[in-house]
Image 1: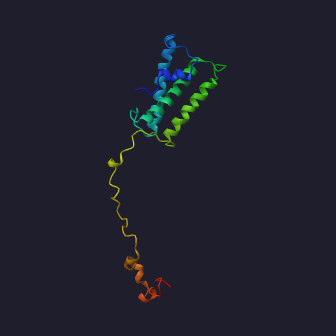
Image 2: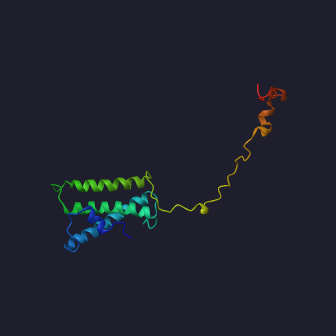
Image 3: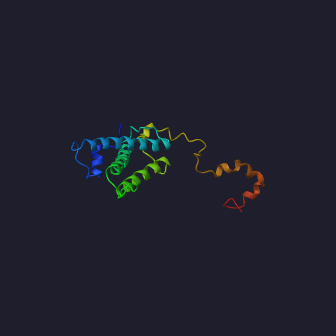
Length: 165
């Protein structure tokens, strides 16, 4: 399943010839989609995600955006000159940099991909199963059971209305 689509790439690059007008452009877009999706999957795998991502509407929207931007960059790189053989077009640099920045953040877990839907509250473990928590909010009556309480004679603690000296 491809994240990027030809219409999304054409939206980013309106200077490309219309679909069918040039079969080379259609083939170039198809190749760019394959390249971009493979790069996206590589970065996701580096970040510990199972690839290809197939679930989570928000995750798929983000990946479609990133992959389409990267594929558009590849189309620019292959179609337009940047003013010389060794210089890439500035539009390529912008698109490529934008997509790679997000991919690097995903790979490093600086941002997380919302792959799974948030579970319903009914599906979560019982929140009442917290061990070691006190249910008695008034602990004064139990403090005399603490080991340090017997450190001083009982008369030391009963010195007035506050219970303390």
